[in-house]
Length: 242
Image (cartoon, rainbow, N blue to C red; front, side, top):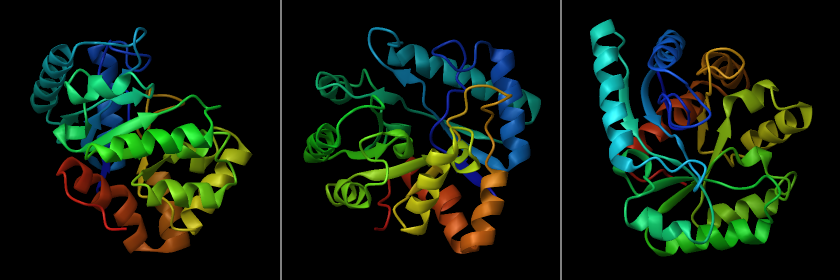
């Protein structure tokens, strides 16, 4: 079974993820061994702390893709950003300073873990209103949404797509986050699972253990949907079926 990953910090030397080309290659070797065959690289966009120009990111991605080809690692690379939402960031998305996922209409958005549900909803409405398809990064970590099924359903109704970290399901962010992630899966409120990988150790680009859990609990179709079909639709700018 093959997987696609639309949230990670593998691009080297641009944020708190990989700190060298060599580390990125080590991470990508792990990803390949895990069955990952397509990756949308999503460095943080969080001005002024993380604000690498888009052209620099594109050059870095091309260098990394060439290195993969040279080493015979068969992973296709795409580019985007994990965009930390502030009201002022909308202009940056529209003018291309902050990148959508694989040059699609999907945009990966994260928030302060203490952001209010009302503000998250307002931002989703704002993004959807200009034709973007907001993907909420690691939704299981926002305190205002924890245990709030109706609020998550409302965000989806407003046009949001829900991404959960594979590590959250595994429990690396604690029992409470793991339990909430599994409730979201059970309620069919997850569109995408991604690695959010930052290194090759505690937060490596791994999906196979999560895939085994999903296969056991929900079967092959649901597993393929969350780990391959929907991520590929994001990369190809196709609609994810509700």
